[in-house]
Amino acid sequence: MKDGLTAATASGWSVIAPSINTPSPRDAHESRTAELELLHHWTLHTAATLSPGSQELYLWQSVLVELSFPHDFLLDGMLALSAIHKAVRQPQHSSSLMLRSSMYIERAITSFRSHLDQPSAATTVPVFALASLLAIHSLAIAQVQPPSDPLHALCFMARLFKGIGATIRNYWNHLLESDITPLLVFVDKESLTAEELPELVRLRDWVAQMQNLDHHLREACLDAIDELHFILRHIRSLEHGDRAPVAITLNWPAMLPSVFLDHLAEKHEVTLVILAHFAIPCSMHEDTWFLRNWARWTFEEDQEVDERLGAEYESYIEWPREMMRTTVS
Image (cartoon, rainbow, N blue to C red; front, side):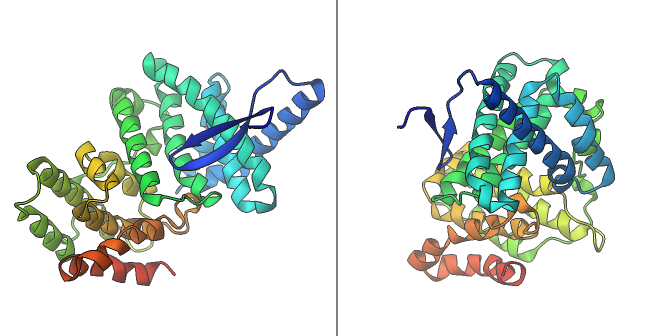
């Protein structure tokens, strides 16, 4: 490793990040200018990509920016995601922008961990905001550095989302009373009017009848199917022209039981068949820059199942394959 560089590796991606030394006055000026440029890009461009409505845009663009000034970890998270977004829009500068993003996100995570170890109501909102940014960052980095092992990356992100959810859950009531309530997504499962999807009912019945599956794995698979069924029914229940919140789709990996993730990482056939169906809601967000290509990467994991196991599994992958043909070019 050359002097002045350190390596940071996470979730299957390798990033070279500059080591942090005492900067010269010129370096300090350039660093400050770069940060101001990224903050400008955040308020002008990146915040809008996280905001389906004007109320949410105001929060990401103004309220949370102001909140980040006394909470450096949140500011670092914003700068990290802004740098990736700018790298996607300006690929000719992607190398230097990814270096900066890596530096900011590592700094944010270091501080974030200390707040997780000593949580308090006072930092609940900035911690929630950074947790959301970390989840998006883990997806967005693939837009510049496509993962060599998408399944490994997906499992890493699912565990990240689960950890974030467990942390936030402890302070949920405080979040409900805060200024960022519009960022919280609420869906009443009992009020869904969309009919059940026969393809997922069939998939659930198939898994429920598998006597050769470990009991805990079978229950985890059924839970995963039920949650996916809810997401797709919710999307179908929206008024024409309404967009499904990205948070609804990303709730699926966040709720996956650990036993499901363990078997998914080992490419257990049934978990891969279920994962193929997750490509459907992902494909509905192809115009969301940090989710672009994830539907295709998710579905590609199932090609070896299709080739190796024959007609029984093939028939359960046909529906997501057909949906992918119509939604992802």
